[in-house]
Length: 276
Image (cartoon, rainbow, N blue to C red; front, side):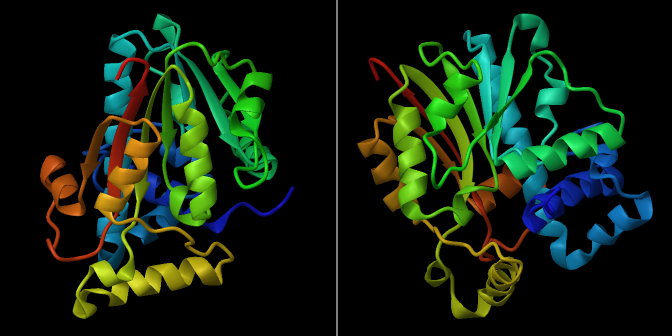
């Protein structure tokens, strides 16, 4: 089995640390610790003050995505897609399973092999309503891979796409959004980062260090967006209902403190539906 993505492993540990250190105050996930495969002592190392905001952002983006999905289920959505799922556990927990919500996880074959191994080690069974669809976002047609796994493109769909956009080329990001925008009714939640020049020089150090660490681990950040640019590109792709939460708005919504001038991720919810 290939080594897991360093970023996917790091994110899984941050989600687990949020359960251990904040008691899941922003985002409760009972499977985050067991699927990580690590001891409480190892997980607690991710409680360092310098990564607190990153840990809380990871919790907030998952909370926002799943709250938005719950609203979509209430209006009739019965299939969800988690793109670049890593060790995300929504498909294991699926609180909407009784309503018929099916969950498709789309990820690289090596990532899914790693996840299956983590599930087996933690004795976590794969529910009937969770379907794996192997795909390489840079090289393969996303919808073809999903349809081959049983996805119904004619039905309303909700997509969770967290922690992936920065690592793809701009062309691959737009190609994925374009493909999804051709569905008759699709809603998506994803996150992104602004370019370094969007922030004053005195606030860039930590952001530059994070980007450098990702590159050193073989996963460079390739794509950044300015909010107005992204809004324009989403509009051109047919997404007319767009909500973009800034780092400050995220902190206010989920009640944690942060420097309003410090760099941080944005969370976006966008919907494209026939007749919009």
